[in-house]
Length: 256
Image 1: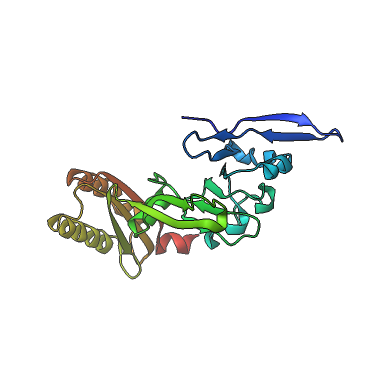
Image 2: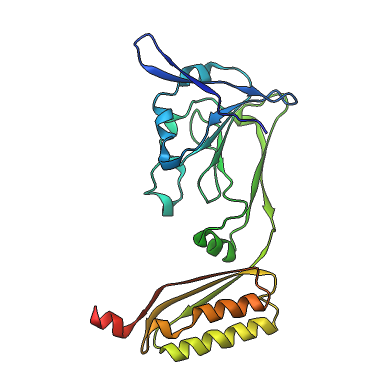
């Protein structure tokens, strides 16, 4: 494993600090790689403020920039308010920009002076939101980007492929509490899980169970989610993620 973030700080003629990155050359393809590692609390974003982009842009050859931060220009709509940086803070004229940090597949190849920019998303994610997205059908995997052997400019990209990984099976279960009391909802969940067990839709799967809505009677604590979790594990579920944050009781709502 090679660490690509190799840098030193120096002062330019005006006395301003500049961050100079070193390239690592792949011995087989002669591709030149460099980049900036991700840091907690977005500290790495400050590196881009002092980055010596001129030296990077003037470097010849086939170049790949590796990064771990959010690029505002290409964020999906649901992440538009996420903190990040502008693509202009990256050095221009690289053939490929390989990104991490965003848990969503993104591929952009239309930004002037910048090559192909991708986020492959997580190969496998443990966050509840990511598990839910996977269970709803989002495919996980990685990109393979191919270039013409003689002309390796971004405009000579010959193929962009996303390779899907089928690591595990998921089962997404959603229950709506509206117009049901706690006893009715609990019985509905149990009946559905028993049916899924018979149909072999629980064994060796990651189960995402989501319950939301307003109960017409009873309390949310009447529904024994711990017992539901134990049942699913007993029936062979690899992992059980239960989200009932959106479940409320009418009695509690009226009191509040």
